[in-house]
Amino acid sequence: MSFTYLNELPTPEQIKKDYPFPEKLVALKKERDAMIRDVLTGKDDRFLVIIGPCSADSEDPVCDYVSRLTAVQEKVKDRVIIIPRVYTNKPRTTGEGYKGIATQPDPEKAPDMIAGLIAMRKMHIRAVEESGLTSADEMLYPENWEYISDLLSYVAIGARSVEDQQHRLTVSGFDVASGMKNPTSGDFSVMLNSVYAAQHPHHFTYRGYEVETPGNDLTHVVLRGAVSKHGNATQNYHYEDIMRLIEMYDKMDLKNPAAIVDANHSNSGKKYAEQVRIVKEVMHNRQVSSDIKKMVKGVMVESYIEPGNQKIGEHIYGKSITDPCLGWNESEQLIYTIAEMNQ
Image (cartoon, rainbow, N blue to C red; front, top):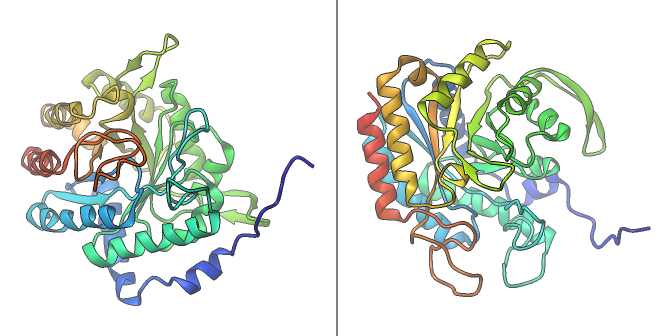
């Protein structure tokens, strides 16, 4: 046998029992989920800003960052809904390197999946408790969903996962907003087919059970740029790209057409400071085109306390150990700019 079985993981029910979501926060999450639903269904003209570290690598600085968003949210509450990024899994292109706190609670020590599941849940709960803002996470591993299914208000499916059938089927059972990123190839049809699959009911196997799902009508697209066959980053947030997306959406039987623009990754060529310019262009295009305004419901921004990134072991508080991020001062000002331009 090629697998070495190390530990039997606790069930989601066990983890939830040991680390419960406080009852006082359940109503808050329900309210936040409803607000996000109204934006994606066109009932609310506020704009979604999904913002935070590339990878939520350490509880204290992540919760510090998320709590800083609370005062900003209050100032822009009439025009913007902030969804903190608390991404506890880090997809790796080659499979090597730090995979996120859910796998490796201490990036300088060996992986520990049991401790990781606990650290993942504790961080999400603390972030909500201290900020009053429910978070987004990326579902890298579908079987992990149940461990935090009661905590999240937004789930992203990454560029390397969006073509996977198990991811698509699992999203069809979610009751929260779920963004399907375009694949690294940039193919819009793959992304839209993923949305179609997730919006419809399914019958499949999940965590050792035969299950049925009703479909998730809040599944939508996330534009993150692409990589050409020559290895060059190509953008897909421009005016022409959104108009093409609208045309393709119109040809498919999809509910609640909506797009989120990821301002980093291949859209910025991982030049994190470019996110400010990219977001401003997206907001400008919404101002000049009613069709684009109707389609583009939000942006994703990679942001942390300190700008840039660091190597594991440097221990700079609030600085990314994965992709470089926009710093706090620039991020705060960008949110105010988004609010001003959302008219």
